[in-house]
Amino acid sequence: MFAPSLGIDETCTLFKIEMRSEITMNQHYQNLVQKLEEITHLNGVMSTLGWDQEVMMPAGASDARAKQIATLAGVIHERMTDPALGECLHELKEKDFAALGEMERCNIREALYSYELETKVSKRLVQELAELGSRGHSVWVTARQENKFADFAPVLKRFLQLKTEWAQCVSPDLEPYDANIDLFERGTTMNVITPIFERLKQELIPLIAAIQSHPVQPDTSFLQGRFALDKQEVLARKISQDMGFNIEQGRIDVSVHPFCGGSHPTDVRITTRYKDSNFVESLYSVIHETGHALYEQGRPHELGDLPATESLTMGIHESQSLFWERMIAQSKPFCAHYFETIRAAFPENLQSATVDSFYRAINTCKPDFIRVEADEVTYPLHVILRYEIEKGLFDGSMNVDDLPEIWNELMQKYLGIKPPTDTLGVLQDSHWSGGAFGYFPSYTLGAMYACQFYNTLLREQPGTGQNIATGNFVPIKNWLNEKIHRQGKLYTPQQLVERVTGEPLNPDYFVEYLKNKYSEIYRLA
Image 1: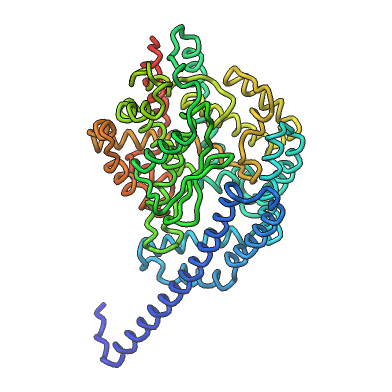
Image 2 (image 1 turned 30 degrees about the vertical axis):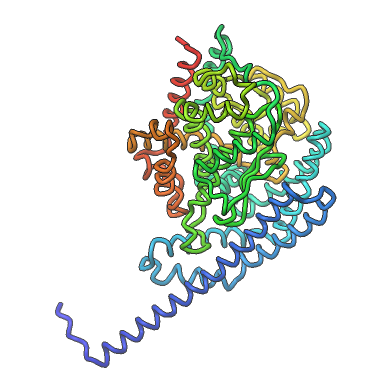
């Protein structure tokens, strides 16, 4: 049907209406940006308090810090559940949402997700979780030092109660443990993880047994002895900066448990721990945390301190640390490039070593009690053990008081070793002291993501091996910046993996990588 032309007055009226609508939309969006950036800045303060607690805070200040963190958590919760924020979000979501740009839509989508999540949880529960997390960390540190799991058990029991309550609030349709996993790896459930982990057990347990039974093991004697801590620190800092860590916008410090924290991409803080009997642990710990730091420093923060510019999930984050630690730094080309530098730092210890013997030594597969010191073949079984325990705690098939025995039984079953103390067993990780249930699966999901990403990099940059051998890490870092870091939260982890690699997460790459690498190192038939 023919539509008659509008008159000048009618056209002007419609234009004014459209302009008012656009101005209102812009005002709503600018109001949203202001509120979201304030929340981001408060979270940055919280992160700095957490870093200080683990690195610099006097031990006697733990109670005061717990109250400070609980108070700040309450303030952040109030900002995140402000009805005015909800009104602004719903207004933006309902009016011309599709007309906005990709980044703007992502900010609204992520902010609405967080708002709906937070409004389902009471301020009382938020503060109790925050205070227990702060106090629980101090209890864990002491229990670990004194080998007294019974002292930590009450904290763990209370966390399970609170995290179950939290899960019922935020995701009543999910199993409580699935709700906790979703917090770290959105869209991933036990139904996804369990079959993958079962496959890894089937593949890795026989591989480890074959390696352990092989008559010829790599020589690691030159990695034993005494290694000056100051030389360890200099070496770690050099390699971290060679990889691309911007020390003008970051720090490297010492803590009980290595981590990467900080408040902003311009303030990224790495920690490690040094032992004079083992320089490899501290060096590769720094390389691992530098992988996390490069992700943080590579985020598109110039677009604002907003949800769309944040890192994606813990699994994707872990893929970046393991990409550098495992795929790059434990490779033959990396060892070839840095061998003389490392030998110059510890000439007496590595006098008889060669590039090949060093490569084999740092890639030794040997079951150990400590997860963070585990090799890449046994590491997934450390994660699977924790995953199965967390599943059992949430579904009621396991009790907190029985955990030392359960832990030791699973260690014996999967790795053939039994921890002599709880310090070397059930008390070794800090995660449960902060209520971070569902975090552990991200480590092995990250290892599989890393392997798949690296396979794609080799396809797109065939000269990667030569670049590593000459210490030219810029093309690798730029590829990660472009493909992953600068994507922020525009995509789900599942979408990102498919965009980068052309297919969904595929554990075959990880399994084949381990089989091929370690069959060559150990000369398995």
